[in-house]
Length: 96
Image (spheres, rainbow, N blue to C red):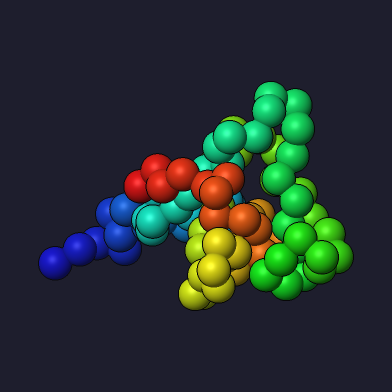
């Protein structure tokens, strides 16, 4: 039987994970931004296409982009950090 102190010690690493984007990568399939020039960004759009408004940006090379729904043609619903929207699938590479 676990003693409360031992249980608390075992729980601390789990609580430390929280909901940080970097730790989210460890537990689920994620994607990273690729084929975007260094120093540039991938625009997050409000809908599946280039004519929708830009609602956020993801720096080149960033990981932990999570696909949150279906892709429509070449556009996928994603979340990145605290941002949600659509990005072109051609700029994502599967990492885990």
